[in-house]
Amino acid sequence: MRATGVLFACWILTIPAALLGTEVRWLDFEPSVVELSGILAIEVHLGPPTYGEQPKRDRKLRVPVLKLSQPVNIRGNPASELNVETRENVKEVQLSFPERDDYRRAQRCEGRWVTVRGTLSSRHTGRHFKEVLLEANKVEWCKPARNNLPAGRH
View (tube, rainbow, N blue to C red):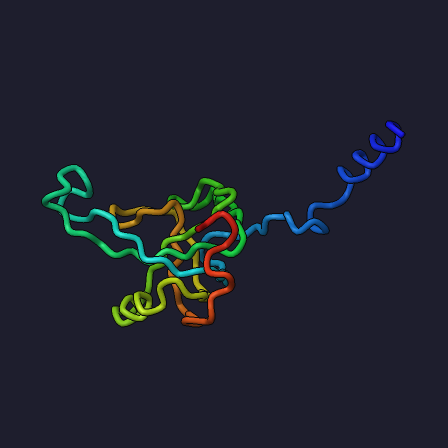
């Protein structure tokens, strides 16, 4: 009986991660275009002039963040000055939009499911609050939420 349990445990360990649904997708930084989906959240962060060093003086920035439906890994690019480091198990990305109206639209879609196409980069300014930035060039806005936040995100 004990040998059967050991054999079963060994068999489980040989099942490919893809069959268990645990394989994390690998993506590339810009210029590659990616498509990510998840719940749109609006987070408040301290901005200029001191970005948190003197909170009473700082503006409160409303920052759009995509809480991903599944974590992703992003391959670093040694040829890039900005995106050298590989990022693993990324669960959220800060969104950047080309048009000011898109930021207003994002606020109306808070808590809703969205799909965003664009390019990924590492944060590189004081206004980037997440490790990874997704510069959106196409957004499917406000789809009905899928159980609101992904597992563990409530």
